[in-house]
Image 1: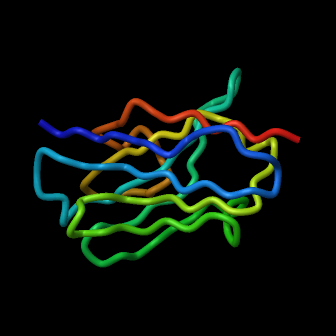
Image 2: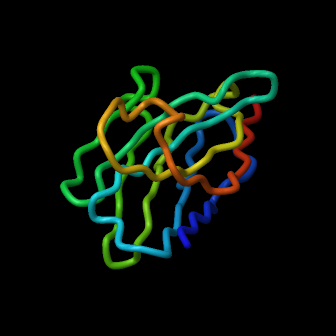
Length: 124
């Protein structure tokens, strides 16, 4: 059974940084794409970034480029989201997700497995 467990969220001041972690277990993820999404209150779930577990290819939402970096540690079966220069509008619950197959990496409906989410709050 696939499990994705996020951690690392919290309260940070604007301009600060956080690193989120997503620990994956339950199968071999070498063929998987691992994505990060976020959802703010009253808003739809939004794509943040994704990485292919095997090749390390990354893809970002335009608004996240330059501030957020996605990476993975194969030995630890963990995916990370480094978030810098945080803004109050980055406040949301951040989710880790996993998928196989083809199609756009930014479409949440194509992801098969989801974590429970971790809250990130950026104060002004």
